[in-house]
Image 1: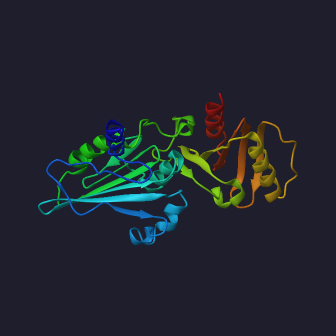
Image 2: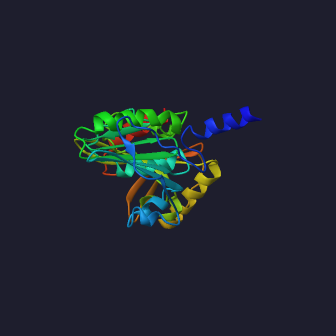
Image 3: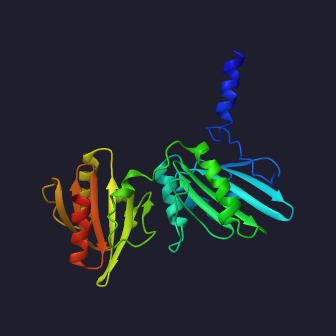
Length: 277
């Protein structure tokens, strides 16, 4: 019995589970106070003004830990967003376009005083004060120590790898959790931008758990555009969206691929052909 209790305690101390978080020890730094926990009932006390945005990405809770080393300060925030799509989504929306992304967890980046990364269902944010070069030193070291305690798998959501790399705008891959392109019936979608000398387009992917949901999206879209609903079978479609312009769509299995943006046929066709092959 004692052995079982001991094993259970070790399992809990790994770092994160449904009810607790054991913060990492950082060499040379002292934890200041207890771990703070915020959930949907009180997140506004921690990030007042941004909580609704986090709620849209399935926010569950956040653990906040503060450290001190003399006059220097360090803050660690571990946000639980319930699943890898939503965690990547909030990370992707806050990631700067110019970020030099690296393999930290699933993906991350750092600057002089900050380091942010995503892994599995967790979005981790770290920042420091009065600690020169913290991003590439203490923050990176702490992140690499924390990652295996948070998740066994460090891959990005599988859909992300479907986006062809050629002509892709760096750091444009994102996840929108609802109301894609301002239309509620479209629901969630992954997207990435592509650009050449002729213009810019957005490739999006809607992934559903059954193909009947894709059919419903298409039917609603044609009705919204006040167009005759064609025979709905897997293949290509064009919708004249009164708000978003001409939308090129291709239905394949449980996925709906689409392109919006500038009228750049060569770029559009090359991107769609690459993702469909």
